[in-house]
Length: 527
Ligand SMILES: Cc1cc2nc3c(=O)[nH]c(=O)nc-3n(C[C@H](O)[C@H](O)[C@H](O)COP(=O)(O)OP(=O)(O)OC[C@H]3O[C@@H](n4cnc5c(N)ncnc54)[C@H](O)[C@@H]3O)c2cc1C
Ligand SMILES: *[C@@H]1O[C@H](CO)[C@@H](O)[C@H](O)[C@H]1NC(C)=O
Ligand SMILES: *[C@@H]1O[C@H](CO)[C@@H](O)[C@H](O)[C@H]1NC(C)=O
Ligand SMILES: *[C@@H]1O[C@H](CO)[C@@H](O)[C@H](O)[C@H]1NC(C)=O
Image 1 (tube, rainbow, N blue to C red):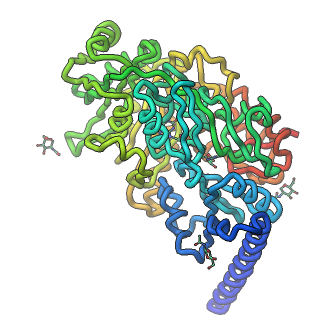
Image 2 (image 1 turned 90 degrees about the vertical axis):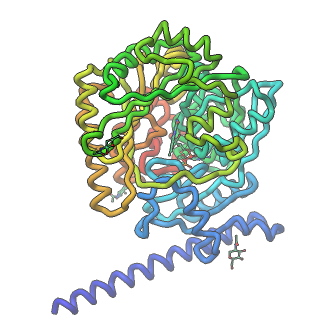
């Protein structure tokens, strides 16, 4: 009786799988037919479509994935990976997906913390922009055009090749993609001086839900505002950006002394909280905090991971004035060109800057992260409690990123990214593990959730805010994407965008009223 029951269930399941996968093939066939209809003369255009029967499918799908939590046998896979080499291919993909009810997940660098650029619970294709990564730097005009599929490393490399006195304010990890990063903000070592990557965008080219290709002028200022920090995935496929590049001196200084609890780390962090956002804009000191050592040696180690846009002598004077407690000495400092600091901050010591052109995969691991904004310094007691939490976890990391500088001068509504004046620093909580069992994942993720709960009294309130590029699905997801509501999505919308959430929803309602571009945390169209 029991056996019969099980086999009945099994038959039912396999029938279901059979019908759902043949349904998928049907959708895929229709999509391919539609796509080739747009390119009747070009036989090569189909080479940009990689289906599971092509040997290229798996490596294309998997190689940019950074978070192994979303690379398992049960992770939903795309019907196809499309790798457009022209903007027409992007337009055809949008048009044909919309016509045949296939969802698009756009991927530039694949660094999304929750895998939203390459997984979905409905039939979907990945539009992977890896072959759209041209970079054209015009140092006389202090500008550059960069396609979304370029990595930050490639962008930094080509800027430095054109001009040793230019750089760009964007993130620290060179394998991040331009497309996701710029559209979510983009914060890095020179953001206290020049702002976010998004603050330095002058123009952009987007393919909208109707398959039209638009630049700043034709898309209008509202949409152009929304894609600079509001998240690209709600609004279209941004294929290229024009950016303003910034002046950097030919020699800059880096230093990264670290201190353990025995060496007075707590007091130093407490002092850092008072001054990090008030330091000169040329000085960036972020904290990388880990728990390391075994047994009795286990301690908290704080690294003061820093860049100064100037020479060592001048830096030592600034430090003597503002942070003498750290005891920085000349021997802690190294002078180098700005492009070399990219390797330094990514711990690529000994590698050459040519390596920035390779989209070298980072060491992969399973991870969970989230973020907070701090408006009042944590007390020493609160810091000590935080250390206790970290000592209990195997491989935790906290990154404290200082704000202030130009970030205080940009109005909250200038771009969707609202975390400006009054924020001392951002905390990124990060936990990594290397065994992908459900038990391990659950244990580490639970640690993160309990810590987030614990931190409530110490961080921004009403709403408790977070950085979109450190996406966390724990803040909530759409329960029903076709019936999605403005108020439901406010749970995470207010965290990421504060008062700007409303304007984003209005713009979404205008440019994509049918909500074609959506994901678990996309902006719903305001109706
Ligand atoms: C190791 C690591 C280090 C990081 N360091 C920093 C840092 O220093 N500073 C910082 O600010 N952030 C940092 N981040 C976060 C990073 O900025 C975000 O994860 C960013 O969204 C990644 O962009 P991507 O193109 O690589 O990601 P993807 O996974 O490709 O995309 C992320 C999101 O953007 C959408 N998207 C991507 N491309 C486009 C496009 N062309 N048009 C429309 N939508 C698009 C995707 O659909 C997805 O929703 C880091 C992340 C990692 C994993
Ligand atoms: C994928 O396979 C199809 C059918 O065999 C073939 O026509 C197409 O050229 C292949 N695409 C790629 C990118 O290799
Ligand atoms: C602690 O560190 C010391 C010095 O590095 C080392 O000799 C010792 O074995 C370590 N103890 C433990 C328990 O790991
Ligand atoms: C989702 O929302 C749509 C539109 O409001 C509604 O028709 C549908 O029944 C809802 N589905 C579920 C599962 O609630």
